[in-house]
View (cartoon, rainbow, N blue to C red):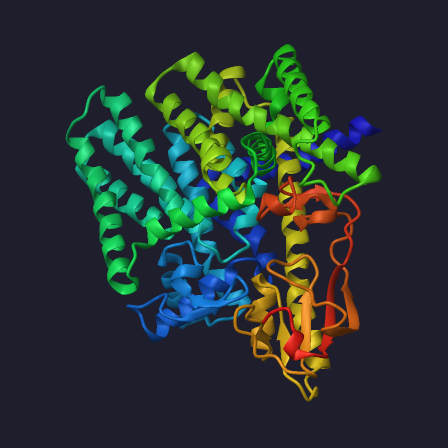
Length: 565
């Protein structure tokens, strides 16, 4: 009976797979749009508000994207100091909002274009690297790290879109000595950096590939001066506007944050493994088709043993401090599971170079290893967004490995991709509901205290701040508070930059509780999930009993003794 059901499911998938192979570009475009369409109404979340506020500023003052004040860390400061990203994404959102408006659906719809560009770019690049480019494109689309990033309005997917097409034109331009394609690659590299500063990692990657492909420096290297000049111009521009080059300021912020958080490199390396394994889940789900059983068992056992010993040694005690009992074992098991996935990702890059040692193998290996090294040892925190650039490279490595191991695409591999798609959709759904609680809670508490004689204040940031301000509430400024007796203070539990008042300073009015996705999360310390920051959990997403999101409302009793003064 089970075999009959398996055969029936397989037969249903065959027409879909055949259609994909006949019309790959249209199919990939339609599949990307259909897959992401259910999340168009997702509430703005995490750093989304920073990009939206800058876009609104750009509509009013196009030449001064960051010339306004924002309270993002608990005190008011100029936007150029609060944000660590260049303004290209905000210019794109400002342009899109002229046509589509500022609603969630409108801005998310605009962000579908970069998502489609990444998937099609992966397909185009994979055509030059293997016989199964469709496999690589699907592995990219349904990589949880990519899929989840596509449901935000932040700059990561736009940066990756420029990145992947820069690599496409660079590879094709070097192969054919085509100056136009090399010029396009240089321009796209510049746009990648101006979308997100992490895009600067593309420069050494392209330079290394050019050197290995051509065996010497040549005229091709001159085209890399295009992004260098663009970044230099951007730094000069921001220096003229704000008195300091913005890329330099962002680098200083990252170094300071890295020191202040004091996370060991070993913890960062394990976090990077788990985020790489979860973000590029196809590397683990397809592992039985990529490796011989003996090889797979050996490095699976080795990775699991090393990570288990590290966990037993207490090196991640800080990340797991709030998790106890059965849930502690559940979280540690998931860390080991996804760390094995991260080992599969790195093994793909290493074996590719070891076996082939050509320029394309080195490109993919440098791409993956460079992204991993940057996330683990350079960037100030590990998260799903910093792992994102490796997703297309891992997808192409999977396709090349499958091609090397088998003469025909194994039928059962399709079920590995179905598992990846299911995980991606589950993660996006959980994040959708989590983001929605910020919007719902803000609307709920602001409506409840609208008739209050005092002003409504709040602590916390991210999407919660966006919706609280939209409802007329005010963010607390810890450095210069102006609160008064009788004012209302709202604090979301588990948000960032919060300082609950003491009993002498405020009285609790009510605790609000909002349910979230019940057994899976992308951001909850109780289950170890922290897709947007490993400081909130060592897993990109996690299974477990997810507690509801909570807010506490206070009435201030003594403004003179307020701790924010």
